Image 1: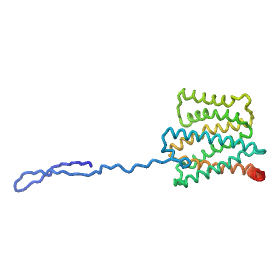
Image 2 (image 1 turned 135 degrees about the horizontal axis):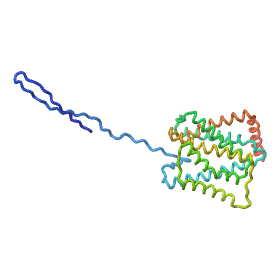
Image 3 (image 1 turned 30 degrees about the horizontal axis):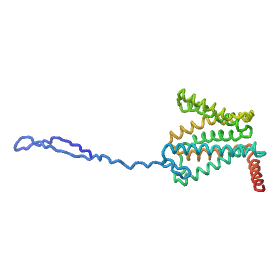
Image 4 (image 1 turned 45 degrees about the horizontal axis):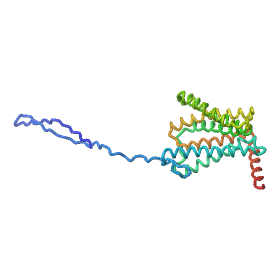
Length: 280
């Protein structure tokens, strides 16, 4: 508690004595030196129900990076397996539409179960830009699977970090040291050599596929930096970004399929494949 003493002289004159008298007063003012208020509770980050944010940092790094590798390999395997179906090549965008629908559903379920709510902080215009870039990244990448074999895709995807770094310099104004740039180049070259280590595996280049995967990389170079800037500026949660960007992207792809008359033919092909799988 902070005490402030104020002193002043109050003069009064007695008519009978004709002299001054001073009265010294002390005034105590309680300014309410504050007691520390309740500290905000630390948000617990969960993954498959596991409170990973409460784990030691080395364990968090090991678990999360392992999950990234495992799920990315599973994703690549299943994606290429889908495109081995006869007649699947023209329907890469329909596959992307289905993916966006599931991503939106999963994000919505997670937000409802966690009690976070679906209110957004990032402006809708920014979400529209993110959604458009997300559509380009996944749509072009999925479509390229029908024209390029796996080694060729890995060659291009291994170089993804290079355009992303260039985009971060142009969009976010980041600066990288010579060692960071050299590490990026060495990692990309090393991944390409590792992919082509087997002399029996040769990349298959298709002009259409190369154009599609290049457009996907171009969108990748922009989307990561736009997302990072928006999340930092508005303090938006990652699940909210997934919900709004993929839900808006779903309607963008849906409109494109309807305008190009591919929606019905793609849905018919998917239904036919499902029936054949049941019969076999």
